[in-house]
Amino acid sequence: MSTKPPEPFVHPARERAVLDSAHVGDIRGAFGTIRQHDTGGQRSLRARLLALLAIIGPGLIVMVGDNDAGGVSTYSQAGQNYGTSLLWVLVLLVPVLIVNQEMVVRLGAVTGVGHARLINERFGRFWGWFSVGDLFLLNFLTIVTEFIGVSLSLGYFGVSKYIAVPLAAIALVGITASGSFRAWERSMFVFVFANLLVIPLFFLSHPHAGVIARDFVVPGIRGGANSTSVLLIIGMVGTTVAPWQLFFQQSNIIDKRITPRWINYERLDTWIGAVVVVVGAAAIICVSAFALGSGPAAARFAGRFQNAGTTAADLSHVLGSVPGALFALVLLNASLIGAGALTLSTSYAFGDVFGTKSSLHRSFADAKGFYAIFAGLIVGAAAIVLIPGAPLGVITLAVQALAGVLLPSASVFLLLLCNDREVLGPWCNPGWLNALASVIVAVLVLLSLILMATVLFPAIDVTSVALIGGAILAVGLLGFGVVTLRARRGASGVTMIGESFDLPKEEWTMPSLALLGRPEWSMGRKVAMLSMRAYLVVSVGLLIVKAVRLGGA
Image (cartoon, rainbow, N blue to C red; front, side, top):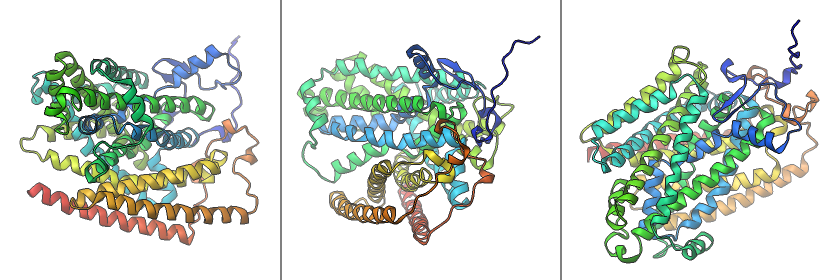
């Protein structure tokens, strides 16, 4: 007679609207396993730590992956050209990262549906296809810059790019197409731990604690604010808060099979990741600031940043071969984890839109389309870097501008989805979070527009545009706040979706997409969506014209 305990009854409302059966089952993380029917109830401190170890991953990987080749380059430039005077920008980015990615955590765990699929279902096919198409183009061009980082980093050690780039591409495809989520996540943690190389590099640069502490808390810009410094600050924000993060973490949470009962653990994973990414960025700024931007070396190197590969060589001249080699390894590691996460976010998004099997739990034979998109992006991006005379500078500019195009729409959709009661029910944003998120989204939109404008119109006065845009933004937020408060006072009590299930909040999940009612579009929302569509069409058109001109030049 079998002694196996009976399976607990699962209310239909607890079944997430997953699009791939591989997204249901035990959580098999890099450092542990949680069984599918583990309720996560009364747990000892040891049991909670073990659960955190099993769940940790999506938040930490997405954050560390954001310190990619472009991030290392931007932070190095900030340190070499402006010392530590821009460290305060990183402090402001911590709440931005946490707020944005916390909303993604809830969307992934509660809905079981990827970001692109939710946009497609709740806002229409145009926006679904646009989000995936723009993400594909942006990610592809960004992956090209990651392989540029691979070329520069291994070039420091004398390795030809015709050897370094193909080997990196083969390694990334092999790691991802293993057919095991756990094996993939463990490989990503190798890159996460390798990110710790910035710590010895930081101390080798002979940092000054007092200067660092002051510049973390006292805003300022060495040399004063001007178009160049303001543009670099915007670049720091853009390289730290990227659209692909939303798509990646939401889908990776789903693929890891994290459900609402484990949301607090995944939130902690995200908070840890936000701190780690900012500490890593600060360390890179400090290394360039103290080794190249100040002291005896300043006369030769301060204000003369070229690229991250040159920074490694400069560090070897000033500090010795070990710091130079460490910086090159940090750049290589950043390029590889950035390329891996970026490419995977694209594969997930295509699976969302086409409804194909999209899971790292599946083998290559069982999810050919999923892995084919991944391999195709990696191979295509690597091939471009190997083409003699390829317009890599144009590609870098296009990445910045496209990020500016996609981030406003992605941020707006994120906020709207987190207030959609059909989608999140009792997990919708509370009022205070909406207020904070609205301010963050508005600032990100403004910075993205300024960044894109500088690429399209290089002669524009960035400082003046930022001041004017900031004033308009403040007035707009004030008006929006007044309208929202009046609407809340005039609204009657609303019954939250999910209360009728008579379930604890931790067990409420979104019903199947087919059962959801179509969202009601007010006149204001229709006008806003049409305006955003017109903006996107015009901006993308201008960007294409600009890219063609630069390519021809």
